[in-house]
Length: 333
Image (cartoon, rainbow, N blue to C red; front, side, top):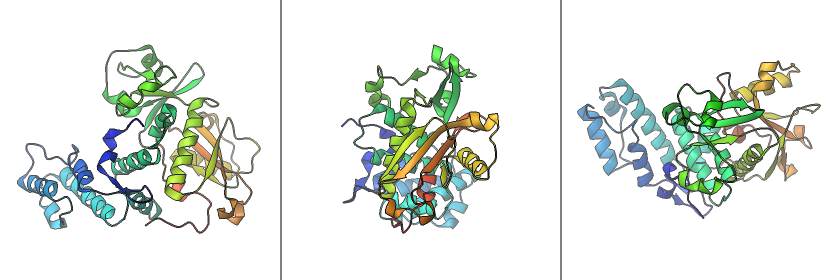
C-alpha cells in the first residue's frame, strides 16, 4: 500500500498485537523537534539544557521546579503542556488508550496536541485505505477547514494552507474570495492518484455538497474511527435534510452541530443562519443493537456537522467516543 501522512510520525511507532500504537523514544523526540519546543538561539541556558537532556533520554523525569526556571513565559507554558502529555502517554499502553482517557475524563490539552493524536491514530485506523476521497475527508478530523459556497456547491479548503501560503492565483482560489492569492486545486478523479505524494501538503480542496461523494467519504471515516477506537460496527448514511424524524439521540460533530442538535431537541425552529451553517447530516445505526441503551433501542442516531459563523469547520471527533448511546462499553486502558 502507498504511504501517506508521514508528518504524523506513524512510522516511528510500534504496534501491539491488536494493531494499536505503542510509544517509542523516537516518537517523543519528534515532539521535541517541533518549533514550539525547539529552543530558539536566544533561549535561556535552562531551556536549552532541558531540551538537550530530553533528546538524549526522552523519558527523563522533569520537575516543575526545572520548568519554573525557564525565563520565557511562553516557553514555560509549552514545556508544562509537553511534559504533562508525555507523562500521560507513558501511563497508557497505547496512544489509542491514552486518547480515550483524555476525552472520557475530559482532560484538557492544547488543541495542537489533541489534533496530533487524532492525526496519528486516524492514520493507523486507515492504514489499508486506498481511496483518496476517504483520506481527504479524514483530514477534517484534525485540520480546520475554510468553507465557501460557489455555484451551489459547498467547498472546503485547509485553513492553514489558505492562511499561510500566498502563491499564484487560480480560478478556484478566486471562488473562495481569499484575502490573498492562493493556488487551490479540487480533489477529483483526475488527480486522486497524486493524493499520496502530496498528502502532507494539505493543499487539495474538497467538495462537501450534500448528496455527493465527499460526505459519503466522511461517513466511511466515521465508521472507521468508531470501529478502531470502540470496536463497534456502525453504518453511516448521509442525509440531505432532517425532516419528520424522532430525534431520540444526536451527536454534534462540532460545537455548532451540538448547538443545532440542542435547539432541535428542545423543539426550536432553526433560522436561516443556522440552517445554512449545516455542513452534513448523517444517520447512524448499530449492527449489534444489543449494545444500545434501552431508551434508544430501535431508533437511529443522528450526527450533525456545522460550520462556525466565520465559515470555518472545526470537527470534534472526541464526541464520537463520548457521545454514543451504548451500554457496558469497555474503556481501553
